[in-house]
Image 1 (cartoon, rainbow, N blue to C red):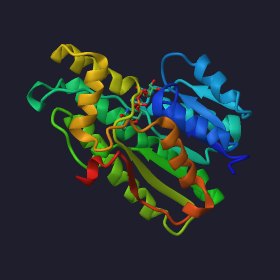
Image 2 (image 1 turned 135 degrees about the horizontal axis):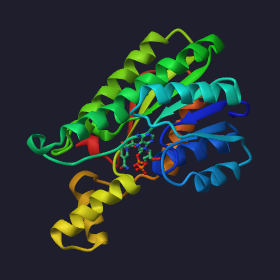
Image 3 (image 1 turned 45 degrees about the vertical axis):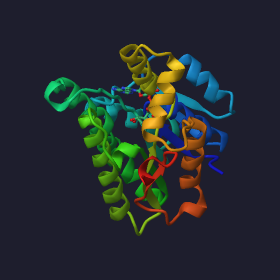
Image 4 (image 1 turned 180 degrees about the vertical axis):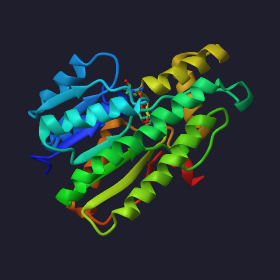
Length: 256
Ligand code: NAD
């Protein structure tokens, strides 16, 4: 379905971003990966799906590096047809103890980076009259949890940005939507599981059970593969008129 298209997925060396990249590659899209840590492993996984894969190591907190990445993607593949704004970090602390530098980093990586990548991707999408911007927000773009001030603020902002981009392009073939996952067992969440296990003196399995039981009625983690399939749907012709939604895949978290 996406043969000949190019998808750039930020923060795709791990977790949900890698799941997105694999799902879009399975549909034939060439992929630009981004993110820190091991690059060769994720690159080989996506290449094995038979598409072309490029990588740019832009730090998504730095607008100048985002510009370099977008230029690099255009030079490699002509243009970016599908932009998945996924890179994100977390820090957990009450507001009065929240380190200001962590606040700044979360707002930059989880929110401002999506503005910068989108503003740079939109002209070519509009010229082609086809484009998909998919923002990986969170159930925390819809509801809040204690001790996640910067994350909740960034994700609510990302849902707002999604709606504005959708409206500004509503008469074109460019759509913008957000995906709002509940708990997904990636390294980002494993850190929170580890912290809970250490604080309560419980096993990892018990900490996972408690984490789910607090928020997620299904008592199940959503998987990167399931989220990838929602992104594929947003890229399909059936989703041509899906604009500005914040679609939660959260085991019932936000329904409560
Ligand atoms: P993860 O830690 O597995 O992956 C994060 C990715 O972002 C990695 O590839 C990392 O290298 C990259 N990254 C981090 N800082 C970066 C920076 N400055 N520049 C470029 N890349 C950077 O986390 P994940 O759980 O897969 O999270 C991906 C997205 O999904 C995040 O936006 C997160 O907020 C969101 N999300 C996650 C969950 C969950 O339960 N895991 C739930 C809702 C939303």
